Image (cartoon, rainbow, N blue to C red; front, side, top):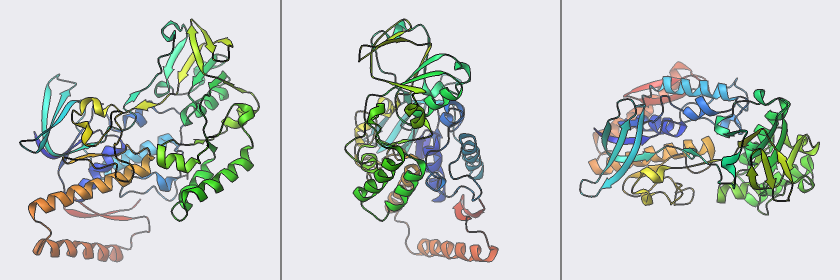
Length: 425
């Protein structure tokens, strides 16, 4: 099967790229190994999850969140938004397609993608001029190889299997990992009266949602060191010195770390107060595990009924992408630094791997679609003569339509599938 563009992955990155390509009337196919789009959100997100960033930073291209939606959108509401997004733009992924190999044919100048149909077992071959990796940073869960881990006698899960703390009442639960998921899961466990402990080894920043929102707004106008100074000043006032509770702060500021290393600060949902009150116990790194007993680096030993590994994910794109070095490094993440991370060689692109959340996804998708359109036009010698005039006519017509129909401020006018659509959202 030959396509102009093949997108691997139907999460938010793949959906956004599809819509942006359709806006330029570029045909494409989406290959998704699961049986549904956005499977991480629909199947694996825990119940109490809310978007950590304000809604203005969490919309996908051409469809902002409605004005009456909450500033910080709950998981279920975001899933409804994704449902509406897929329906509005008629996105049609091909499900049960697990990409096993993708390589560039130097002779034909095209990408050859082999995907196994998980229902029939057949291997299908797709040929494309452009290939977009949109399989996400969270392709595979990561669990550290701890001594004695296989001997643990209690329940052991990764955070992507965690839904709520309702079944852990009165149980001793250890959370391994102190990022946003680990801190929020710890808080959730406590609300269901679990005896909760969390492993904290590495330094990290603690901020509130409003601090992050303010920082993202002012970072458009001020250098990062000024933004970090202001955010840390507010964090000091709100949280004080957390080192006495086992939480150490990095030397670099939160926005600098996010921009240069992709390390996000912990956005507090109430966990810090529970740590201060010792309702949630902070423990050091794990030395070994023996049955239900966990030995810590400080020599202490405790028994636990369950361990939740909130230790993150990893990208596996470099495992099936044989020529990954055109855009990725050996860890499956972009080899080029932001903001040039999304474009590789040989018409290879990646969307949603910049560690900048949904805001980064939208930026990537728009840039990728525009670049593919440019390459196609240059190859075909388009945007000259009558076509250029026609393109200008459509742009002017769009503005006239907007004025005539009197659509609201939140509406968007988009050229989709050969027709103009007014989107009231």
